[in-house]
Every structure is written in structure tokens, then in C-alpha cells.
Image (cartoon, rainbow, N blue to C red; front, side):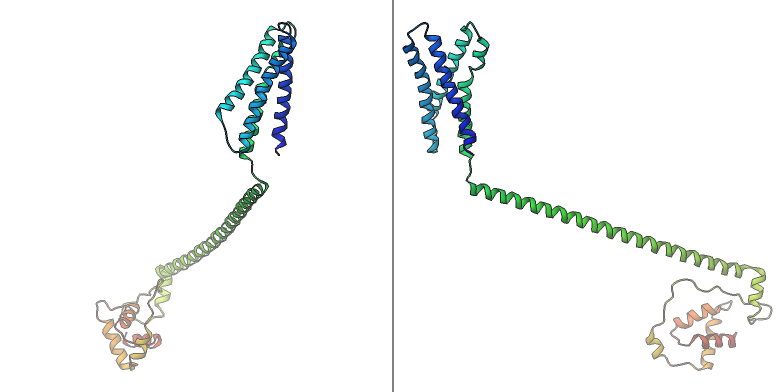
Length: 286
């Protein structure tokens, strides 16, 4: 992994040093003796390389010196300036020389990138630990997503089942209510009809001469059952006593109470008698 950053920096440094030395020798060789031009080129490259070596030594020790860094960038700027000046004064291929004038600065930038990589580099053990943590986090997230999807599907199925069951119950209740309403309407029609009422009252005994008892509709609604303790604790009434109680309740108001009203008041008063005996007593006194 280290070679991915250090090799490009070394290659760029070598190319820029060779190019700088060649340009200095060719450019200054026409004005001064070539040994002098060679010394100048080697001085620029030597200063650049010396500061780079010292920066690398400090980086290996975990240290950094701004002055050394400034000197190194100064040598890079000098080399770049020499290349630019040569490109501007060259009679042939000025554009090509100007295009490679940035190589010294590029080499310094590559060494800067390599230094940043070294400061942030991790050991293989740490990288393996980080990969393990990331994989564990991905696994937990996948499991959580799967759990949420399964819970959502289960809840959707439950809501669908509850909704369908409620709809079935509502349909059954509607049909039952419709049937009860039809039966009640039929009973009301039978009760209100002239011919039907005459036929129903013909089988009942007259309460008084010339008065026909009114046929009552059955009760449709909640009923209150009689407590078992009242049935057990109350002694059984004789027929004579039952007749007296029934007659007193029936004639307690004017006109006389109907059988349904009399039976309700009879049981509300705490008396106990079977329906058969109570109807028989009603018929005897009425």
C-alpha cells in the first residue's frame, strides 16, 4: 500500500531533477562555462533533495518543521521559475518546455500526499477490526430491516383478517335486524288489521260484556331475569292466594291492567309463580 504513493513521488522527483539540470546546463551553458552551469543545476537539485530528505526524516520521527518545509517549497519554486524562464526565452518548442515547467511543484505535491497518507495509515490489525465492525453494523441493519418488514406484513395480515371478520359480523347483524324488523312488521300488520284482529280476539275470553280484550304484541327487547334467591326463599302461593294477588294488581288501576303489565308488577312486588299458574290465575279472575 505504501508503494502506491511513494513510487509516483520518487519518479516525479527524478524526472523534475533531471529536467531542471538539463535546462540549466543548456540555458546557462551559452552564457557561462558548462561546469558552472552544471554546478548551478546540481545546487538547485541538491538543495531540493536535501530539504526533502530532512522532511522525510522528521516525518519518520513523527515531527514537522515549518522552516524546512518552506525551504523545500522555495527550491521547488526556483526550479519551476528556471523552467518557465527557459520556456519563455526558447526559440523553438516554447510551448513544450512551458508544459513541463510544473514538474518540480508536482513532485513536491506528491510528497505532501505521501506524508498525509503516512499520518493516516493504519495497521492491518486495525483495518481488519474496522472491517469487522462495519460488517457487523451492516448485518444488524439488515436483520433490523427484515424484522421490520416481517412485523409490517404480520400486522397487515392481522388487520385484514380483523376487518374481514368485522365485515362478516356486520353483514350478519344487518340480516338479523332486517329479519326481525320484517317479523315485527308482520306482527304489527296482523295486530292492526281489522279481520286479523277480529280473528285473534275471538279466541280470548271477554273481560266484561261488550268489551273485547286487546291482543298485545310480544316484547322485543332486553328482559331482566328474576334472581334465583327470590325463587328459593319465597314460599309457593296457593291458588286462592295467587288469585287474590292477581286480582288486586289487575284492578289497582282503571281501566284494568293487561296481563303483561300485571305480570310485570306481580314479579316486581317479589311474588313467585310459574308462568302457567300465573296465566291460569289471570283467566280465573278475569
